[in-house]
Amino acid sequence: MEVMDARFLVGQELDSLTNILINEGGSASHAQKLSRWLYRKRLSDLRTIDNIPKILLEKVCLRYGVGYYQPIETFNAADGSRKYLFQNDNGQRFESLLMKSLRRTTLCVSSQSGCRMGCKFCMTGSIGFKGNLTAHDILNQLLSIPDSKSVNRIVIMGMGEPFDNSDEVLRAIRILTADWGCAFGKSNITLSSVGILDELEIFLKNPICNLAISLHSPFPEERKSLMPIEMANPIATVIDLIKKYPLPKPLRVSFEYVALGGINLSEQHAEAISKLLQGIQCHLNIIPWNSHENALFNTPNDDELQVFINLLNSLGVLTTIRKSMGGEIAAACGQMAGKHSGVSRL
Image 1 (cartoon, rainbow, N blue to C red):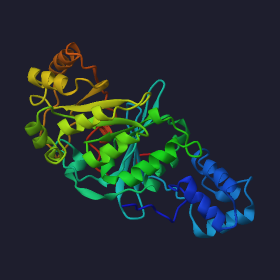
Image 2 (image 1 turned 135 degrees about the vertical axis):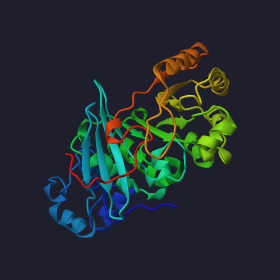
Image 3 (image 1 turned 45 degrees about the vertical axis):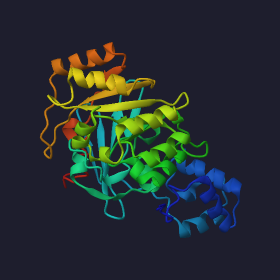
């Protein structure tokens, strides 16, 4: 069910902006110009726009806000990453993480406040579900931050399950990738999902970005114990769908695997993963478990991890370790909880 926030311009697609401008006496051409000011130039004050009639802008301003709102806290980590904690008008809290490397500036955004998937190793899952975010909330995580224009990669891997909020997430991605929007390349955006079958199939029939699937175990019973979603959405069926609807290049499919010391890193796991992923051109990202207070697992030691990775690569599964950033500010994979410290850390 669509829950677009109609009070704001950010989060509106071009057809909606066109209707707004026409209703106020403008034209489709004015809507094209407005969308570029909003999404390309990140303009927050419509009254400074110089190529749309002022009287038209005044009418729009009387009925709509732009929609930017600032994070309530910012946390900096020694590794150069920066976490932003947001709170929207509904009181929902959620986080995003900015990560910089030599050639990439990546923003990890949230699609929900909390999450209802209940993955046992994930801090976000342990706090429960606080509600879906609108496309406005999702886009604001990019558009409102100081480093907005330097971001060249978006990963929808923060709080929440994107396919549990599919309408708003896909609307946000369409805006991110549209020429009239933020103009990101589709292959520069990755959506991460546990694999909700109905929504996954819809996505695969018309993919608009890269896809990452949370695997975490190749064995159904073990995966079920870690990820309750396995009961209704078996990973084997997820794999079948991906084989049936392969992503067209340059889009890519990858799999994420949280490495739990002493649990899911055996030779049998590696062999089962190889069989499960056979026939799919993909990449496996190993993510050593990031500890938090709401789960009792062990982060694997370096030797255990390297043996497992070497075995997977020898079996033909292209595997690397994903370096987790933001651990010291509780923003690494699986640690986000939308907590407010009450202390400014700008």
